[in-house]
Length: 457
Image 1: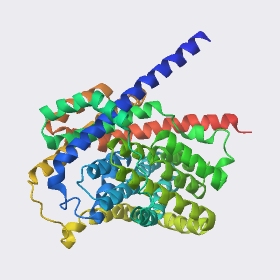
Image 2 (image 1 turned 90 degrees about the vertical axis):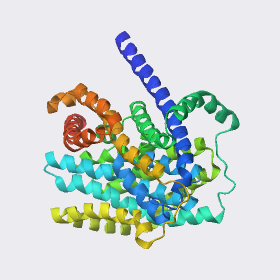
Image 3 (image 1 turned 120 degrees about the vertical axis):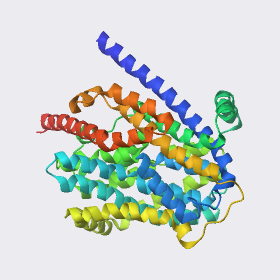
Image 4 (image 1 turned 90 degrees about the horizontal axis):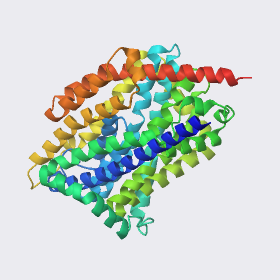
């Protein structure tokens, strides 16, 4: 009993430390991106990649692909809006784009799981379902949400950090921000903030409950068959993990093993797509611009409204339509390749829309700083994400694939400041990470399968 109590206290202490570090880094990242956005704003307005509201939709979409998460990209959109680098419509569409691309990780995990599973159709089909269903909800939600925003219904909402909280932020994080401003070029603050926020989310992952397949299935098999309980479960899962990609990815092994049908997973995905905006709302409040909070609220209200309408009146029609597309895509490899191609080509066209139709405006400032910041964002963000990802992988997984965790972390850390870290990180994500993910999925499914058999009547 004593050893168990001691272990629980150690776990609690570890979670508390990780939580404090995560919050500290999250607020620091917001302040860095806010300061960096102010430097870039004069050179960014009306030029690539934010020519218009359509191009920012593509930017948010592709950005979520690159970092395998929508929340950091949503924070970037709000930071740019707080600095007046983009307008309200662009912030709104970039936020929507970040949600459209957030579920790409589900398709990626589905591919990895399909390599080791005989049920390729169900595992990859879950990723196709997540992306298709998100688009079916968020695209009409985007139109409705912007209507809510322009109608002035939320103009009385001013949920920003109070003067006392803002003062505390300035006292605690201000000195670090001043050091960064005094020793780094202004254009570098923005990509640095993006890297810091990626690290903060990794620390937060260690604190929040791990919603995995065995917890989802154990003792709750009746929930997996009913729409409204599944909807509420999806809301809760995304709210606890603050990540729609994490909340939905756990469905891949469930579907592949036949414990849940893709049709039954639809309400869960719809619920997760609503509450995943919780951390974005907090970021908007910290940034201190009331209009940014209104942008997030308009998106959340519209998506919730569209989702409820679907569930109450159009659920069977939506289910048949989405599943028809899903089945068509996963039926052959050629169609699956076509689907993935569209996933990249469509947001790419949206991103380039300003250049294609000539909608971009010339800017009076020097665009060199903007492009330096964009290049630095790409060159630094990928290695930083690789470092965070490698650190978070348990040693047993590295042992299973026969590689050294320490050597890879050292290689990523050492090469990141010199630009070549991008190449090292690209190799890590292309060759090493898929092996680690496959080993993790197989371990989780083996454990989950044993526990399901143990509790089965």
